[in-house]
Amino acid sequence: MTTVGARRSRRLGRGGMRRLAPIAAVATAGVMLLSACGGGSDSGGTSKSLTFWISTVPGQDAGWKKMVAQYKKETGVNVKLVNIPYDGYTTKLHNAAQANSLPDVAAVPALDPIWSSKLVDLSSIANKKSNNINPNFLAKDSSGKVLSIPSDVTASGLFINKSLFEKAGVSFPASPSKTWTWTDFIAAANKVREKTGAKYSLTFDQSPSRLRAMVYEMGGKYVHADSSGKFSVDAATKKAVNTFVGWNDDKTMPKSVWTSGADPAAMFQSGDVVAYWSGVWQVPAFADSITKFEWASVPTPAQPVQASDVNSGGMTVGFNNNGDAATAATKFLSWLYEPAHYQALCEASGFLPVESGLSPKYPFKSEAAQAAFKLYNEEIPLYAPISGYFNSAQTNWVLKGKSLTEDPTKTELGKAINGQQSADKALQNIVDGYNQQVGG
Image (cartoon, rainbow, N blue to C red; front, side):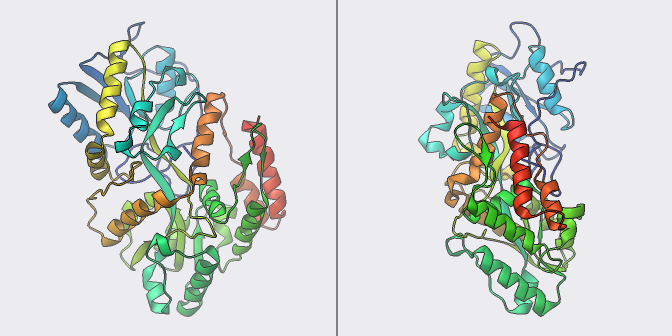
């Protein structure tokens, strides 16, 4: 439920972390619907047979397969898993709603106004104390009805070239309880660059999500709506964004990422960059792809706020197709989010859990990857509530029939980095874009 980031996966449910596609309720007629879900007024499954739609690359749906098999063994209820290609998935859901042929359960990339009224209320699961589900990342309507629970969460985070830090003799924090500020981090990264001859101190995804995370940590709210729905930016946000634009000096940061779309992940993996601001979804890839140097995930900076931009990795929903199926869907999801079952899902699929207090054992052979997931699991409970603001805001926009189809952040800040306008002017243009698309 957030904007596109560098190297973002184009699928919903892979084993590992990924960002989600932007919300877009697209009505495209003529798309073939899966025959697994019947039409008519009595569409949907039964108390003993449910259909569950997901979208994941073959071979990376291990967690879902494991859990539906275990559920059938324990309860006798058959949950048919239907894996749909990511391209066209939201359209297929949209058209299924029009044809009264929605699945009973789904892991979706975004809510759609056409079917949001058919969602089962998951409050009994979300509010169950023993589940320890983080309330900041739930999708709720104005009445408090829980429309979806994340299958997992994703968070922005910081990677470093550990080999360069050690070569330069510069220390770095290892615990989120003793993290650094952005000022301290940039000073350390610059020192490493100067001592080792690295090309840049930092690469930074060309992503509004990553920028939001940095702004939150510097005490700002980024582009934030008031009670009337009007967007603005606060003084802390202006200061943070001006700081960010200033870093793009082709020493601390390369201008080419935010001005012309150069790949920051590739730059980091080259070994010639000290650090990379991206997120947890990079961990599985780095575990295999980085072999020429040692890397590490390090605590996100706090200046003074411990925060990130945390989003739903996938939105698990149930549809009220008929009474028996809706009850059975709720029972299945209730079982799925019991901590022992949910931890097994996270372990098999490489998910970062939305439930606190779990200790998933991931299958990574890389010690750096294992340490990275451990760090994220330690950090998320410490993040300020602002970390989930954008995730919740997008749900509210959808319920009002709106969506942010074009986030102007990348374009406007690219102009500021190029010297075509000031950072403050870029922010004003971004605010205007938000107000035009999702304001009020």
